[in-house]
Length: 219
Image (cartoon, rainbow, N blue to C red):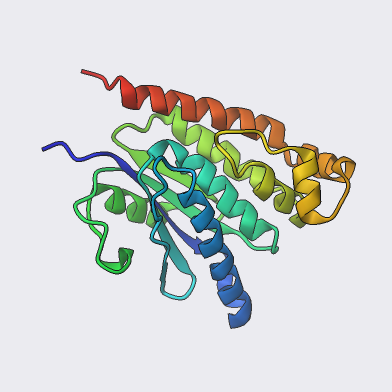
């Protein structure tokens, strides 16, 4: 039996040992909440089963692998708004089990690829991606996204986390401004500085390509 492809995102906070425990806990709670929003992107909505590991580590699962890069960007932006970062490794492949109460006892190729990818990542890297359907171009896109996000200010990351958090529509400047309590012009300054227009375009095209590949798999 051919098992469906899933995406597993495994990450750990950068320089977490320099942070007080309450700040690490707050970051993990923010990731958990953001992962809950990511769950609603999928059709049908599906729990990402956010699981915390070893204090500063975390993991989620997506039944729609095409959303993996957007999820990584939004989760990174969520942390960036708090002045923090995470390395993130995406593994795409089948799963044998998604675990019992959480992902701590999950198993399968997607989990192996995600974990191995994180182990191999340089301290300065932010996003890695691997899998049987993953191309070198996918890996280069992940590298470029990670490099771009590494230059965000906290204010830019805060705006990006909101504007990029919908794969099915464009969230307006007015909507983001209402949430943040600032003017649309102020939002525009932040999202332009963050490169959100280009990032959104890349994510939409990547998602469309992956959805097409899933509908028309290679023989």
